[in-house]
Amino acid sequence: MKKIISLLIISQFFSFCLGAKPQEAQDKKEYLNIPFWEKFQDETLVSNILKGYENNLDLKIAASKIKESEKIVKMSLGEELPAVNFEGMLGRTFSSSDLERGNNNFKINSYQQTRFLLPLTVSYEIDIWGKNRLKTKSKKQSLKIIQQDEKTTCILLASLIAINYYNLIKTDKLIELENELCNLAIELNTLIENKQKHGLENTDNVLASKELILYHKKAINDLENSKEILENQLNYLFGDKLFSTVERQNFDSTKILDNIPNELNSSIILNRPDVISASENVIRANYDAKIAKKDILPSFTIMGTFGFNGYDNLSRIFGSHTGLADLWILPNFNIFDGGRKYNLMKLKKLELERAKIEYEKAVLASIQEVNDSLKTLKSKKNNFDISHESFSIQKTKAQLKNSSKNYGLASDIDTILYKQYEIYAQKKLVSDKIDCIIAAINLYKSVGGADFTLNL
Image 1 (cartoon, rainbow, N blue to C red):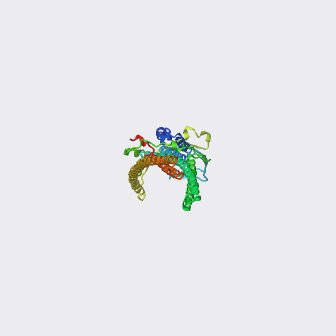
Image 2 (image 1 turned 90 degrees about the vertical axis):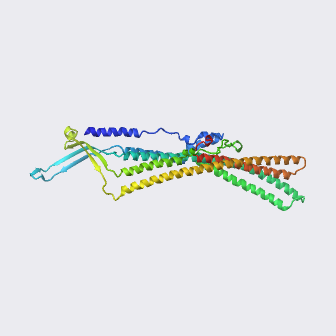
Image 3 (image 1 turned 30 degrees about the vertical axis):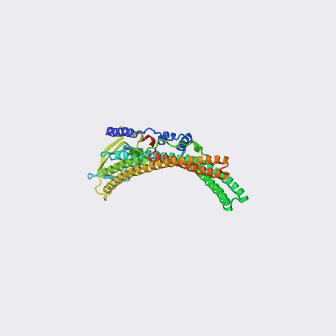
């Protein structure tokens, strides 16, 4: 009997150790796909993304949730093992009168007695139907889903840092261009006022030139405000409590990805965390449905006790005559429970069907998002090409107008106006270039952090 209990404990212990073997730690940096970001040829961008990875609080919360889920899995594994308890007892029995037993006038005289009970109690539910194993598998699936949530957080973090980073670079450049426009507006206003003094310009044009100065000053103020907000947002993503100045390159050093695919293989969506999570959820729901079905079947629990039961003399409690051991099996089957288990089984089947539909929805939504992001990227790239050509035209016209001025064929006002047109075209070029880069980042996000340039 003792051997049976010992073998059960030992076998289940080794089963637990094998099942609970921890997985090797995975480097979560691979979620960021640093080789993709290196294609922008901006070491500061990569450095900022890694800084966010190391310090971002949302990512730390996601990592904490994974550790919590890992503990839940280990708890479930522990429930597959026998439970061993020690419940010692020290008692004093007082009998003030004779005790009669049976019909043969058998009497036990009055007595006083001290009892020492030192048992180990073992209980183990025999997992005949594999129900407990399925519960652990279900918990492991939940862990996989939470791991995909962490991957989602990593991808969103890298994307948000990159988007804010490039918007900050764009804002820096726009502030520079607005300052040039403001200086040109001031210069233009001076020339118009001089012409007015000689009766060659009306008051409306003078007022219009002054309004233009105010317009550019307001634009500079708005851009400075946007710049500070973007820096604050990046410092939040970095987990920087000091809200330090964000390091960044200048606009002229920014690069647009060259390898933009015309179309993407539909299999690329399988890398998306939400699709993987939906797939894992179907497996989890299937386990839960099986658990609910097996829960209707009878269960069998092994109960055993091993220890010592002594009287009066504590020093002799470990003697051979005080040994205590027993073993029994307790079957359990619910004859009537008000339909609870039956309805739970139906509920889990419905949850399984819903999980399958949610998976199909995730796949369909992923295809739509990837197609939309790819279309937007190609559109933004075309806009940038058009803006680049337009800027080249305006720059050439401004140079020609400046040359005409040297031959007396154009006035200072004309050269200022054409220079303004050139800067307006340059502003559009700046916006379209950054919009193109951000569209590429959004495509990276929509394909689940994969390098879509390799999917050509």
